Image (cartoon, rainbow, N blue to C red; front, top):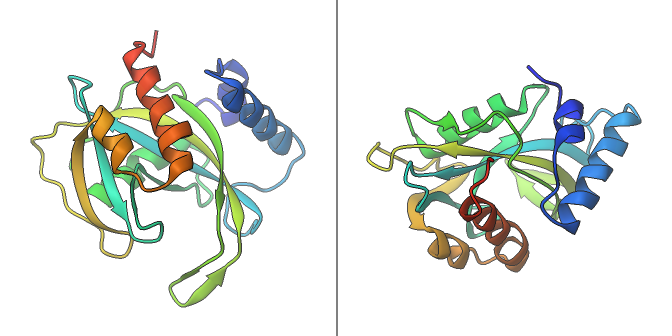
Length: 190
């Protein structure tokens, strides 16, 4: 397993946002800050999956209860230093898919995301950052899917443009999901 610091150093940012966020992730990791668990209440590592069909014309999204929006799937590292394994595990848990595979072990995207303060399981979670890496994952749309009621209320496949339009979060629509689709259409990984 390649360490996340090595993956980030080898990563070629797609745009200015990725360049800045990648540099900040490396800076924070280099300072020895514990970013691997939610014990760090200001910032912690997460891993997401941009789950596409084998034909690369559809994306799997979940209707995330907390954000009241269609979104990608993924979750917290919670101490696991293999972020690809985190992305695979979380996407399977959140979608019910029996089989998801990584298109590549390389990072597909890097982003630092803000999370507003919210209630979770009866406790207040203060505003914080998700230091996120995204992997390009693939699954068969013919496989059964199901929601995970404590996190999402629906799961479904969308065309690339429809996936972006389904999100009610402007930052994700304009900066994240559009970027992921642009990279996909550009033929990443090369």
